[in-house]
Length: 72
Image 1 (cartoon, rainbow, N blue to C red):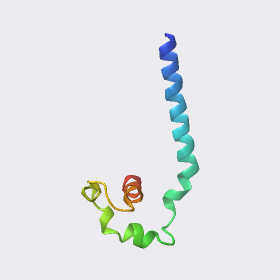
Image 2: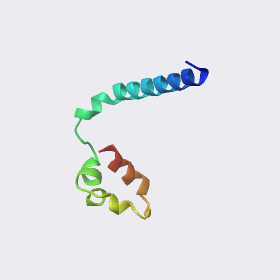
Image 3: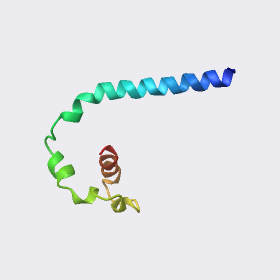
């Protein structure tokens, strides 16, 4: 195994460890109900139902809506 392979392996292990840690930290939210303004902004919002609504990028909440779509 060369030096380059060892570095790639270490990078992959580090990324997997970070991903596993993040999953462990946020694992309790997967069964939590929506709260506060989640109903009108996520559940009842027809604008976030299709990715075609996000191209071309425009509007004031573009990044926020895009994050909601990606997290589903």
